[in-house]
Length: 304
Ligand code: 5GP
Ligand code: ZN
Image 1: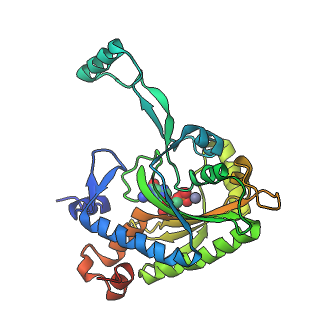
Image 2: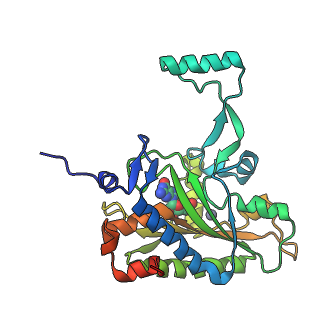
Image 3: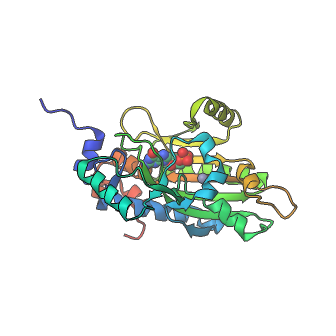
């Protein structure tokens, strides 16, 4: 008897995900890209009344900024660093020999000053810090990045490299709280307009180790992070597709982001997991875009 194809098998057979041979590392086919483009434009429309500043960074971030961010305190297991060959001719010959005989050719590689971006908003805070004093109304930034998290898995929603779109608010505690409230509403309205059943819940981030348990407890107790969950994998365990984050003055302290009255800025962000939301659409509406509900098609592609 033939095995029942898994959800991942179906996504690959349908040309949506293109395997690379590495778990959690995929190319995307034309239909998935079309949905991602529609989604990106939809998120832009949902936020444009607030006139965010649009910036884009490469998927590599400054290693020293990354160290300052304290990401390693909570998530050392997710971090990805860029290493590079720094040797001489003899070292080069050794690399080629290792490749030839199947030995580890990477042992002589050295860490560069670049790490892989773990979340799209990370380069935004040092960018603002380098600009100097902030205006009274604070800042609102629109950013998108390929992100990396070292979480190999054959669950299609757990990718090692994926696209994250974010709106990032920097300002007074009241401004950031109002921003998060507004996006909790907008995020649910956006997902509802896409015909996706969803729920909001407090997040349970996978912080590392024993200290991580304390960080997770604190995050929940202070209600710092909510997630919007959608059934994507067909397992009955819904997947976090958007997150609504309040960092208190964590990044404000690190980057000395000061408001005009001299107080430290608070920050928050709303993050959209682009592939996860797109895969949720394929899960709920099928693999044939032409047969998706007309209302959903109009929301995603109003001009076509
Ligand atoms: P967070 O920073 O809240 O963990 O992630 C923000 C959003 O990125 C999540 O809500 C989710 O949609 C997306 N995301 C997080 N981890 C992964 C992952 O492993 N694969 C994919 N495709 N998206 C992810
Ligand atoms: Zn963020």
